[in-house]
Amino acid sequence: MAVVLLAGASGFIGGRLRSALRDAGHRVIAVGPGMDGRGESQGDFTRDTRELQWRPRLTGVDVVVNAAGVFVDRPRGSMRLIHAVGPKALFSAAAESGVRRIIQISALGCDSRSTEYFQTKDEADRHLMTLPIEWAILRPSLVFGLGARTAASLLRLATRPLLMLPRAFRSSLQPVHIDDLVAAVLALVVTPHLPREPVPAVGGKACSMLGLLDTLRRQLGYVSAVTLLLPDALARACGMFLPRTQRDYLSRDALRMLRAGYTANPTALATLLGRWPRSPENFVPRGLAQGVGAEATLTWVLPLLRLGIAALWIWLGLITLGVVPAGAGHALAITAQNGVAPSMHAAAIWSTGFVELMMGLSIVLFPRSAVIWLLQIVVTSAFVIAVSILSPASWWQAFGPVWALPLLAAMYLLRRLLLRRWSS
Image 1: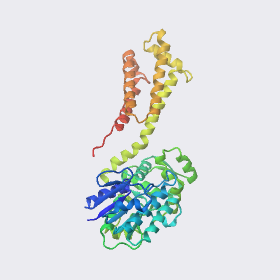
Image 2 (image 1 turned 180 degrees about the vertical axis):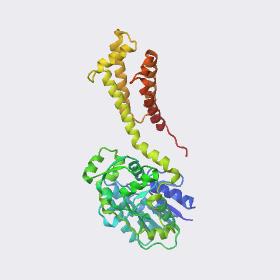
Image 3 (image 1 turned 120 degrees about the horizontal axis):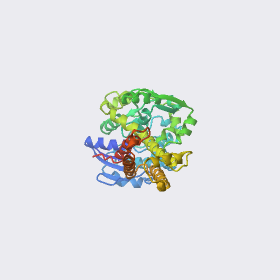
Image 4 (image 1 turned 90 degrees about the vertical axis):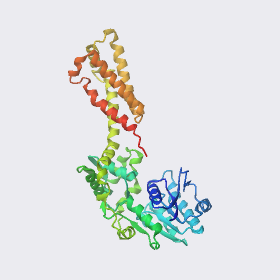
């Protein structure tokens, strides 16, 4: 078994590789930002950019695997350090330290050098191919695997009933499953004869991004969505309203790469695997489809639910305080119906309106606080109990306290999900 130094072990691909290499009996020296434990080492290509910084870590190492990568350049300049400068220093140090071989995970289409992502990946590849050492370069297409941010974004889109997507999503791509990419690396670690050229790591079937979304939707048990294709520039403008982590696929470089439509023959990867690589129709295990679909749906439904509850409280507060026309009269009538003394009407209205506004604003300011949602449940329950005691007949009215029952269920759901703990 080999001693493997794995760079980029803290990322999604690196994490899967670390587990697979150890399961296969290899000793893994995992290197990545923030890592500092048994068999692990602090390592950051944005700082470790010289050969002398890598040489001490390579003593006794048989194989170097580089799985480090970022899709978006944050902060500016980090992409070139992570993809090119740091790996080149590691590769040169490995070639001078007696390391037997280097396995580089690059990107399909990087030799086009059409984006900074491709340019930096290709720079490291070209440097590796000049060194006096055994090398292998895997060039994966879009990598799909449950737990990855890319897969989460795709699944989130696949569960929506209405999609507004850039026209670049019509171009062809050939996604590869993470299990096939990991299996290819394991094969390259032990095979006696490495390929003498970069290997396209692609899935068994090409499709468009739209086709991939439709395939995932069908695997999750969802019907087809209504899809509107927008000019890429307009789609990018609309994407500015999404959280930063959800709009990486709308970046200028991402759309340029999608429009290019990179595909390849999967035969070389199939030779490494000893089987045909997985096609998109088999990306989501059947036994997990229901849970995966529910999780993906919740990622976009829960923010809407939080926003809806906040808007409801704020609107009720504005009505109660009379900001909305006729609101004061409505609040006064309800107060009188509930048996409040005339001298206390103003105090009751203002205190109720203030509480309702604070309830709504607390959700806006602290939407992911379990304590806030517990407070929501307590206050809503107090409202229901108070109205039930003061005016039992209100339960039979069209807008009586019955409205609070689905609201309480939604509040409990939001709090319960915030308190989730997964056992290892």
